Image 1: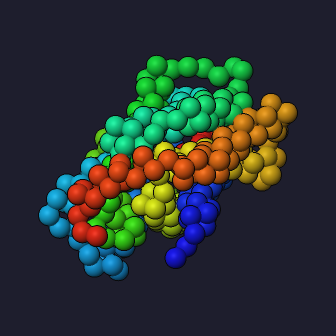
Image 2: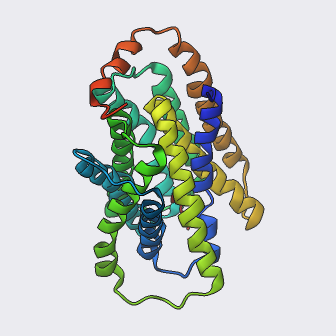
Length: 313
């Protein structure tokens, strides 16, 4: 059985992969078709997985998979790209950085997890670190864009907590397939209304970019993510999402030779400090708090069977 630390490292690979999305999108994909990219990331991969795995939901998991697919892919992707178009990437990333705090609050209500001063302080420090890392002094604000970014953070946070509470009856890969199809089917009409039915001319580079986003950025990353959610506290997992803007900023500096200031370095240290506080010190404290055990046991009845860079996922 894999140790908790190894599960944590494997789960952290998901937001690290998501951090490469901006680089792949800006360098490999055709411009101005974000919803097409969202559809191609989710629906084909989900359908292929269903064909290979040959397992459909049963009973209540038809509607539960639809809800999780909407929250984690459909609604999240749609709002994410609205924010990406209306806000500088730094502002969008900063608003999205409140997700760990939202998850921590929802986990108290739905999972019985503790909202400790450590989690609260780490969440504030992590958001401040993201601000230093990606926010520009001349960043403009747009009410619709800010609301969309906040809505995307809430959607993904709710998806994380519900995935933890419901505990899919199949493995993480099967559950990922169900959610990808549900989210992709929701995104198709949104794409047709917003971008039209015509497809751009695709080069081999474009196709390679879409394949990378579908296989690595979606199937692999979300499989690792949902796998981690089943084994680790939801509020602990969500702090790992702060790695996404870190990887995006570092990748931009290394590959695109974007500038990396001392202030960004301070932001990076704040983010890493908050991650270490929650995932190392916080997890050690959790082993001394037996009061959390009944909360976990309470979940068992729900178990059905055993452009600054756009930090998109």
